[in-house]
Image (cartoon, rainbow, N blue to C red):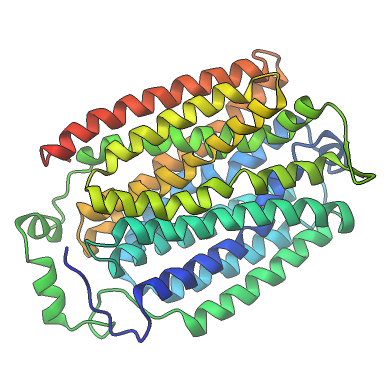
Length: 425
């Protein structure tokens, strides 16, 4: 893959920034659910048990197990901008569905709708990034996009918790729908078409030349691509998502409650536990904001994406152990360490895919990658909340087991790094 010249009138970094900003604001309704639904008072007000909450937090990920593959195929065959704009409108619809009533089913239907929307948004954005990036900035641009995603998660958790306390759950979700519609309109006018199709930025001959430049790309062009060679990437992202989007996201409010025991007072004002949890979710992503593009840039310079990933998994394992420390300072430091999971893995795995696919096959491999990612995200809240609800494990033991999984992922990454050095992966 060579450095690509675009005819879109906007630089690759500008395209990634546009995608990143739209992705960030799209997370307002989604991140708010993870902040507020596990809170027992709000769950009871909405007519939900903790087991129902676990199912709802996992429902959109379970949906994506079936929609990620078709989404990847769509991005390999159709123009990208209409699909991306559609994803934001579907996201707005999901937020509106949350407000149609109380109980399990209205929110469940909204979660399914959001799952479809996120398949189109996430896989489409990563496909576009791999199309516009070159060898010298593939990791950096994926890290830059991940930085915007983390900003969205943090700010959405922070403001979502505050707005839910001030406005109530349903009014807050209606506001989220308006924000998503505004983002969709912005993408329609601002985002260029980048797909490598005739008339879409490159000529047919240029496309053919790019795809036939190497024996590997010839093989991919004929559809003969082995997904088995990407198995280490699939397993690594499954474990990372199980911990980050599952265990940590679903149990954050419980961890905060245990750590501080009661609502705390700041400058004479008592902070409700939901607001405190939203603030925590916002602060814990700060290391990842700088770390995501930095890790991507480092992997570009070193050419050792898997080795960098192994180190990140190890640091996160230490963080999970520290989070169960009874001393608040060490527990909070551990929480900051764990913010590297998403920042590193979600920056490096798409770059690994981009290293070994052509534009015509990247969508398919990314679709499969995020099936594994969403399997981890689906199982995380289901397993963790159900086990806690049934008193099978304590929160401390759950975090200790999570640290063991992260060490397993670090070992897998070291194994994959050997293949990387020998050009086998």
